[in-house]
Image 1 (cartoon, rainbow, N blue to C red):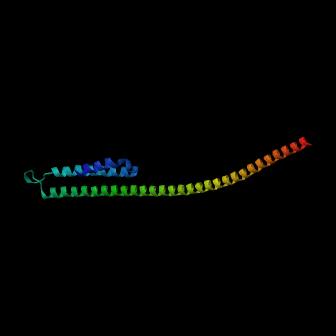
Image 2: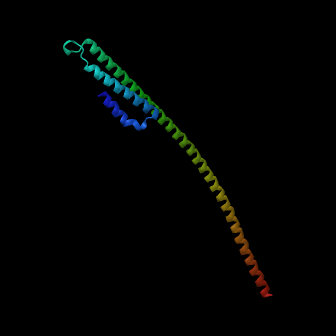
Image 3: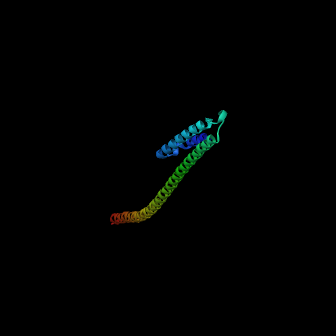
Length: 157
């Protein structure tokens, strides 16, 4: 039953493991399979009188069960360690994203300031251009007016 649960757990999370961690877990599961086979062999031993199991047979069976439990504990420790590694990796990735987002936010603020400065300089240039345009219009109109005045004064004389 425990073996089935461990395999189910391994199948659920296999894509997330590192290759080294996965290889180590597969080796541990194979060792557990070997221990389970040996336990079953010891369970079938009946060395007592009339084909019964002796105390020695039962002690041997219990020893195999203890070894299986120790192997299960090692497998669970390895799974916990892999989970911690992945949590650490996810946390570091999140912090990396925070740093990148912070840097990009600073860049965006710098670009906004640059755009604002550029907008101010454009408005100053437009103001100077408007002044030049009005000066040109006034000069043109005064020249036309003077030309008309000179033309009328020459025509009347």
